[in-house]
Image (tube, rainbow, N blue to C red; front, side, top):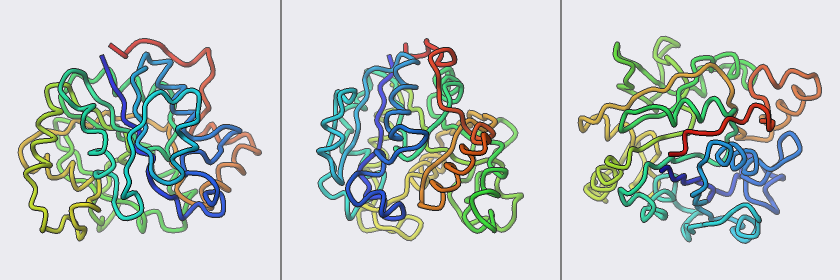
Length: 272
């Protein structure tokens, strides 16, 4: 079986004023909240055990009829993604595989299916067509990009650093991670063994980036498999992003990057 943990605790300050009265994951894209898009794709793939980690305006998420389980990060305004994941660490008890998913993304069913079908213990989705999207989102794609380097075996050897050139970016980390059931306890043991007084890519432990945790696991000898896809995914990080996607939708071009799922293309299976 597969469980999912959706990290939805953040305030989404870069999406204000849209997030003044709602959490980031409930900002609408293509007529529906981001979280609704994601829950639909998960359900179609047979992933029914979903925990949403809440923080800012948690009550709104808790009232959603299709949200069955939540965990709360009471320090959402002063911590980061890894801390939010640890608020749902009881779901990583080794009895099921676990997906860890960002809440400000949407993706097509094929993206999730590819990750679910990966039989490696530690994997994450990688968008090989990232540059076309980044070029639409910003004047200088390299200014916002992070390194993601693959070895000859399709494993990620570096991610989350500042790139020197496009040669350092073999693809885009997408915020979809899969931990095999047997690997979940390895993740928790690694995290629990981290120095609470150290800095991780410039951040203290409560504000550790998810990419820093993944890199730490790689450096500790755990191969991170890249599940490579071509498009089918976007992130909504700012007011500018939302305006861009709405403009592309009006022009009929949003499908160049992501298409909202329909009952016909939402594939089942993969949840067991």
